[in-house]
Image (spheres, protein in one colour):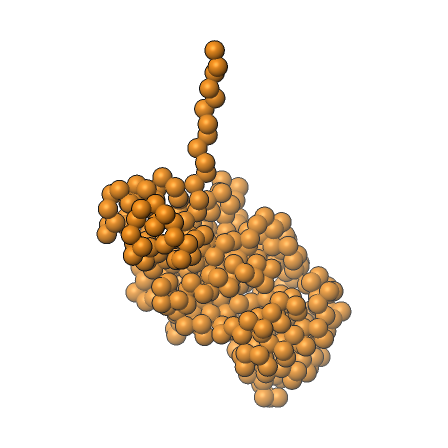
Length: 357
Ligand code: SF4
């Protein structure tokens, strides 16, 4: 007698990996009318449906057909914490149980979402909690898109205002997940997605010269920020090992190329660490670096992490540092720390909830 082994059913495909043309082709090949693709696509992106049951303008038969072949790998909010200053940090659970973090930063004139682009990070910046985690994997476009949708919902529910800005400044190095990050921004800015203006989006990099040039070649319309934190190679090598293969000269050249291609001014992010990069000599080096490409400078307060010994500079030194630059015509914004009490501030994202899963 032949024992028939049970054949495992094929794993379902993630439907959001299909573009609208592929979706239409699939539906037509399964005896559905082509115009259904537009409806399904709208549910998937514009309406952020998390199940086929929600797609109320499709027949039950069509919904069952889709559910038999596909799944929607939506992210789920695992935990959310609200800071005394209104900042909300969320841990999002991915379909494979990894956790990432995203932050809503409310301020007087904007509602900003800070989103992650990778699970962990491979770049080991010494001041950053994420840098002490291994990189597990890249996020796909839908996982970044979903963070924006979830944080937009938080902004509306908690403050009655939609998101106005997005920064790719959470966990991970966005330019090492280039294609997915660009696809997510394409979806976020598309009228078929969230319809946000590219100028409201900033991608922040630790400095991958080759990929900065690629952004220029792709003539992107969003903003680019460089996490600079030291404007001399010796110091930068100490805190950001990526600088050893992407020196300040390489970065300046890549940024000049980016600027020529896109006409987009760069933002330099500069965290001021106590007695490391907060002297007037450091400010002078930063001023000289800003002369190499049209730029503005965000000076950011540091939030100590358990893994490293860096401290925030004192307010007097910070003021002197900013004044030095301003007196020389540099556009400077001093960014006070937000969400410190919930570890939601710059460099603090590291999934401390991880142990609970
Ligand atoms: S600062 Fe950014 S690039 Fe550096 S380790 Fe942290 S997440 Fe990675």
